[in-house]
Structure formats: structure tokens, C-alpha cells
Image (cartoon, rainbow, N blue to C red; front, side, top):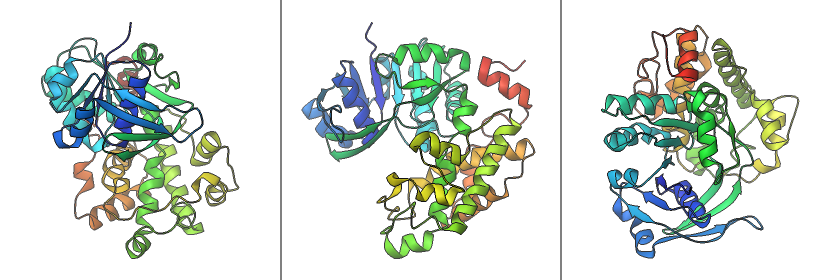
Amino acid sequence: MTKNITVIGAGHGGKAMAAHLALMGFPVTLYNRTPEHVEIIKKRGGIELDSGEEGGPRGFGKLAKVTSDIGEAVKRSDVIMVVLPSSAHADIAKASAPHLRDGHIVILHPGRTCGALEFSKVIRENGCTANVTIAEAETFIYASRSDGPAQARIFRIKEAVPLAALPSNNTEIVLQVINEAYPQFIDGVDVLHTGLNNMGAIFHPALTLLNMGWIEATHGDYQFYIDGVSPSVARMLEVLDRERVTVASALGIRARTALEWLKLAYDTSGEDLHEAIHNQPGYYGIKAPSTLNHRYLFEDVPMSLVPIASLGKRYGVSVRGMESMIQIASIIHRTDYWRRGRTVEKLGLSEWSVSELTRFVREGKVD
């Protein structure tokens, strides 16, 4: 049976996913809270998709519905794909809570760190009693961009993306439901694994903050991963990565190191992180952010670094490197990212033991 799919968010990722799903034959509803942003898509009835790869998906993806009414968007769906910055997950959870029904599957693309835990908590706090399955992807399946108001381009579709449901004993159900569209999704163990293997938490904020003078002086006119990763910056990345892996270990998880991830994702290696990053051909030519007002800070700090550091502090791991990055980001953005971020207190986890947290993410219960 063909599933009705709603895509929440009409940025580059949401447009790419909506168009691709439509081209695969799925009835797709596209939701964006700002009507003007999807006005042309609504008038045209769909999105023109191009591909950066030979044989990649291309054509006109005709959409079943384009709307800025969250109730209408959710009502029409079996599966809800949330393709938004993770800083918007709580707002979408709150808005959609009254409209969710038994059997709904909500997938966060990606969850960053503790996304599914936050989404689940927020919908319950806002009156949702339905039997809803929340899941999160470890990373976004597409490398894509927006080519215009009703155009999108997919450069690459990742071959394997870990995904986990909350609780993880529902993961197989989610994978079966979406397999026809996305056989690339694989079992991500549980949402602690997907969240703590969040490599963007290590690379994005630190590379931005440790090169902030260069970003402001050149407006990002340098190679982010090549020029920006000097030996000293690489040592800082190694410290942050070691803290992340140690937090995971405290929760009984064997997380991938950054070196292992580079080998797995890009088949590149080196004696240390500096050498491995410079051995990755795909990093050459990638420019830095043009401004410090960038999602590498306003999204990745509160939704990735803060939850990892908060878990570390709760379970006895020194996370001084992460704390320093969070503090610097808070100073330059004149905000308190600890207060805005996904802390264990905000997620309702502060009183739980490791075994209670582990049981909750696997079975959905604590007692």
C-alpha cells in the first residue's frame, strides 16, 4: 500500500525530498509555515528536480498538496518527514501535537543529538496521547541545494544512513514502512547511538569558532576544511572528539571516532585528524561560512554540542573542551546556549541512571 507522506520544511533539503518522493510515485504533501515561501510551488503544483550525478533523479515532482496549515499537512499523512534545522523541532512538535493520531510515524532528518527524545517529550507536554512513533536519522540522506523557488538539485544520495526509532524496538517497523522509498536507511541501534555519532557536533562549531577572525575578514573566502584545519585546530578537534567518544562510553556505547568516520564515509585515513582531513579530496574547494550567523553555530551548538556535554556532566565525564566552545559561541552570539540547548534537565533525563536511560530508549519504559 502506497503511503501518504508529508514533508515538513521547504528549504533545500525539504524541496529535494518532496520532489524525489513525488517522482518515485508517492502522494506527497509539502508543508511550510510561511505561505509566501511555497507560493510558486503551489501555483506550479510541484518542484522541478535536477541531479548532479549521471542517472540521478530528475524531472517534475508533482505534489498532492502544498500547505501552510499544519493540521491539514499532518492529517493527510501516514509518514511525516521533518526536514528542518533541529532548532525548529520543538516548535513543530508543539504545533503538530493536537493533530497526530495513532499509527503516525515522524522521522527527523536528522535528529542531531537527542532530537527524538525532545520531540517525544514536547508532543506529550502539548496533549498528544496518540500512539505515535518518533524516529531520527543520523545524518541527512541527500547532498542537495535549492536552485530556485520551485527547483531543487540532488548532488548525491548517501548509500547507508543509520536510523533509530524511540523506542528502538520500533526501528524495524519504521525501516519496513519507508523501505520502498529509502532502502538506504539501516538500523542505527537506538537514538543514543544516532545522537552520539553526530560528527557535525565536533567539526562544525569548532572549525567556525576557531577561525572566526578569518571568517569575518574574508566573508568565508577560504577553504573551510583545508585552510581552516591547521595542526592546532586539528588538536582541538581531537580533544572534542575524545570527549564525545568518552560520553558515549559512559552510556555503554562504542561511538565511532572521527578518524573511523572519515574512513567509513570517505575511505580516507591518516596518522592523525589533521592528516586525514587533508587527505580527503572532497573537502578541497568547500568554502567557509560567509558569516558567523550560521547554522554551524546557532543550530549545532545548542542542538548537538550542548546535549552531548550535558550528558557528559550528568554521567561524570569531563567535557571542558565542549564547554569552552559553548561558552565562546554564547559570547559572540550574545545568548546563553546552555539555556537554549537540549540539556538533560530540559529533556527530563536528569534523575535517570544510565540503565534507566538505556532501557527507555530501547523499550520506552524506565521502571
